Image 1: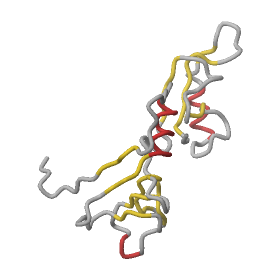
Image 2 (image 1 turned 90 degrees about the vertical axis):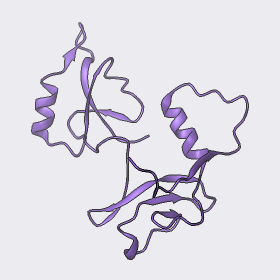
Image 3 (image 1 turned 135 degrees about the vertical axis):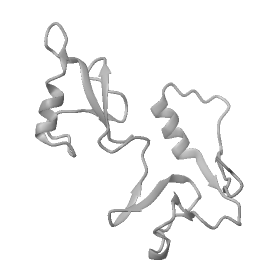
Length: 149
């Protein structure tokens, strides 16, 4: 992959305390979202960077959204008639978990009726594979989807 035409920018964490203690990945992502500032060189012309929604003429570009203080708010693309935030996984990507269904990982929801975006038939087929604990109080093998932090 050639980088000769690449635009290189920086994401900086500003105001970081020396005594910060982050205990899990969800807290790290939340901390980065609250403290990161995104910087691109002045000659960058392909992406749109800023707090305002890009114009219709810029729908083919990637939007690095910030707030009015340049705090990074996410990466967006124009799709299906609107600006959509890019997430680290597919919208309805299914992950299988060994654990306790009462405590899914942060940002994830256990697939059950009413999860949204997954038909009831799909939910039934997925749930048929779930495994319960010995007392049938919760699932030890189950599926989740990412819904955001």
